Every structure is written in structure tokens, then in C-alpha cells.
Image (cartoon, rainbow, N blue to C red; front, side, top):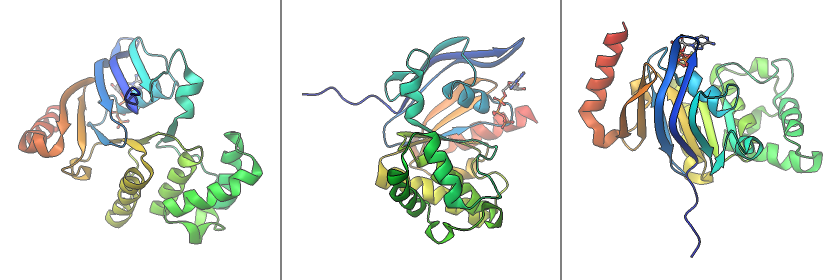
Length: 242
Ligand SMILES: Nc1ncnc2c1ncn2[C@@H]1O[C@H](COP(=O)(O)OP(=O)(O)OP(=O)(O)O)[C@@H](O)[C@H]1O
């Protein structure tokens, strides 16, 4: 019998400080394979810092991060190859077409020209943007641009998607489209997602939730099981910050 596959992401005892500011304190949680985990926190909770540690932009003060079983510090190449990242800042060039952008990013991942064309077609289908393949990114709507960023993040077939406030600044319909695309990827492609948000309404009952506040995990579990304590607890934390 083979051992069970490791989780998509395992964070244990993770701490990080910026000088005197303790941005994360002993944070531990897991993103199981094929799961959608919402990382819920008000501004300054530590979400972006956590993502920066997972992507190796910063090195943690203490603790461990494993992506699909690979230690982010000791095996960074293996760990990063399994990550797809959609940060708040845009990675696509607005003056180029979607296909030109995706070709460029495929090349950055070492995906050859012959392999790139069918993979670009595949990721565009996954985010429902096939009809925009040759449109300049600047001409796409906000929601389409966000889905285009997700397509870029999927090119190298990551096992885990990190999404930092992926729906920020979008209207309700565009937000729903982005969420639908990510939830669909989990259902059909077996991708896992860590979805950072400060919006309680982005969480579905079947989601797992990790509530981060002032650098600490305050509450974790399935939204349906946490029920009222999640809504009340998060409201109290929001008021504490205000
Ligand atoms: N480069 C930095 N230098 C100093 N302090 C920082 C730096 N980056 C973040 N911090 C501090 O660390 C804490 C966590 O910030 P972080 O940006 O990770 O939170 P966040 O949950 O992502 O919030 P937001 O949604 O506003 O981005 C905050 O107190 C913030 O002021």
C-alpha cells in the first residue's frame, strides 16, 4: 500500500516579524488536497505576509511550510513549481493580447512552444475566456482580467493556487464569476486553493475557513460546522480593529 499523498499546503508554527511588528505568530493550518480554504482576516491580519512567506519572497523567522510535501526552505524549486499565485498586483501586460501574455509566461516556466499552444487553449477554457484569446488585456473587463491572471497561474499545472483578495474591486457579478471559476477548478482539476479575503460573504458552507487576526489563527474549521460562531467571531474581530 502506498502512503497517502501529503496535503497541498502544511503550515506549522510559522512566525514572522518586521522589526518590532510581529506579523505572524505560531500560525499552523493545512490545506488538504482538492480543498478550498478561505483565509479570512481584516486588513493587517497577516494574510499577505503569509503568502509572501509561502512564495519565498520573505524567509520566516521560525516554523515550516510544506507545499505538496516539499519544504519551502530546503526544497524551494520543488515547492514553487507546485504553486500558482494570483497576487493583488497584476502580472499581465495590458498592451499585449491574452495569448501573447500566456506565451511569455509559459516560456518563463520552461514550457516549449509546441506544448504551450495546447496548454494555453486548455487554461483559457478553464477560466471561460476562449473567446478573448486574441483580445488585448486592456480591453477586458475587471473580472475577465482577474480570470486571465488565474489562467496565467495555471499554466504550469500547479497543485495549489494562492489567491490574495482575488475579487477586490470587482462588482458582484464579476466576483461570482471569479469564485465560480476557482471552485470549478477544484471540482474538475483536483487543484487546491487558499483564498485570502476580508469578506465573510465570500465563504460557502462547505468551505474550510482559517480566521487570521493580528497574526494569529483565531478560529479554524468547516464553515458549516462553525456556523454562527464564525459570523459572530469575525464580526467581533472586525469591531475590535475598527
Ligand atoms: N514590509 C513591511 N514592513 C513592516 N511592516 C509590515 C510590512 N508588511 C506588513 N507589515 C505589517 O505586518 C502586519 C500584517 O500585514 P499584512 O499585509 O500581511 O496583512 P493583510 O492581512 O494582508 O492585510 P491587507 O489586506 O491590508 O494586505 C501589519 O501590521 C502590517 O502593518
